[in-house]
Image (cartoon, rainbow, N blue to C red):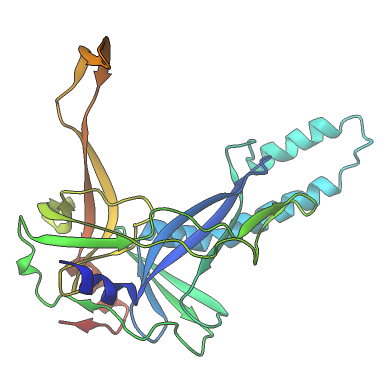
Amino acid sequence: MYVNAIEKVTEYTRPFLSISRAYGADVVEPSCATIIIVNSEGWVLTCKHVAQQIKAAQDINNKYAQFKNEVKALSTGDKHYKSKLRALEKKYGYVKGKVVVQLKNQISVVDTCTGAEYFFHPEYDVALIRIDGFSKVLCNQFPVFAKDSSVLKQGKSLCRLGYPYPEFSNFKYDAAKDDIEWTNAGRATTPLFPIDGILTRHVIGNGGRLFAVEMSTPGLRGQSGGPLFDTNGVVYGMQSSTLTLPLGFDQENREIKVNGVSKKVNDYSFIHLGRCIHIDIIKEFMDAHGVKYQVG
């Protein structure tokens, strides 16, 4: 049903790949999110919480570099070295294994980049990024956003596309440099993952404004910022979050038989419902910032 639509949407749907490391740890944690290339002018659409992570990387890395410089200034022969180090950790708010001190990102949108400007929606989980200093956008086809949102009714079948499972492995931790880095070794890509469902409910926010639609299936982690589209590839929204609700079918001390042996088990069932930012919110935000886009 969505084969042709997925091929269309794949053209402008890109992974936002991240690697991070917590203070005092040598394990590099990979993660994914999703972005939408809107046009040839370097405009990118994604969720606010995704764009905030992209923007935060430089500040996080600069802060840790400053911390390391202050640590280097300490004398390891000083009998008060440990207490001074703890004081620095407290000053910077670093707790071993809990606070991210290094964060690096990769996004394949343009050939070169000298900077970017971020625009965050004041109320909803929507953001725009304008990339500067490029000569070519790495995309030949761009999204077609729905002209008419009145067809978004309960039961309408829609699909989401994104990158929920980080399978890229081209990174490492360099203990000598105390730094995480991208490498030429390992897998540099991660797979796309579509998930369809039907529209279950409309989501109303403060002031009675319709700002999202709910889907019968979850939006998977890493799909945040990915498009919600119909069988023609027309975009009707953007995956933002997933709501988890109890089903009320709880089983406690339920006796069952496994391989002929009686056992007592507990089971608590939940339903996971994806929430996608409504197309009208997205178009209004793009209009407010003068972003050119296609409608159909």
